[in-house]
Length: 86
Image (cartoon, rainbow, N blue to C red):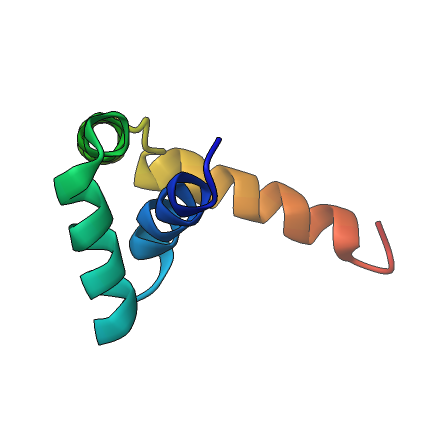
């Protein structure tokens, strides 16, 4: 793997974790304009990121929830076990 491709793949990944500097964004765009494999890698990484974000939203919306009654029952049981006289 060429040095510029290695740096590009690192910058693409870093871009999801932090805001890239202006110089980093410029180097990234310039290299991706000239290098089809890195451009494809960037598109695939973006697609993967969007898919995972969608899966997370779906999981958050459909996460099982305890009813208030069950939550209170668990809290009562925990309190009962932590009492010194129990």
